[in-house]
Image (cartoon, rainbow, N blue to C red; front, side, top):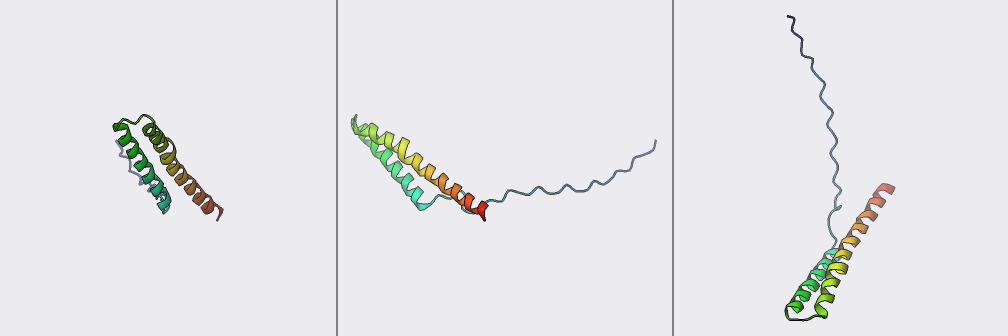
Length: 90
């Protein structure tokens, strides 16, 4: 039987890697401070809960979990989106 010659295939072009933007995931100092404040509020809430507070503890826990921590993340996302819009406009 006749043998087939192996044809050399041209190399596949390398897929471009997604460029990671500098500072795209870095939190600003303002956001880190807000996150830290949220954690402190939560810790104080749990401390008061352990001491038997039925009014201040739940308020502090809700404030920490539902307001301060999410706000620090949301403000971080908005900041990133503004940076992306500036880069797209240039």
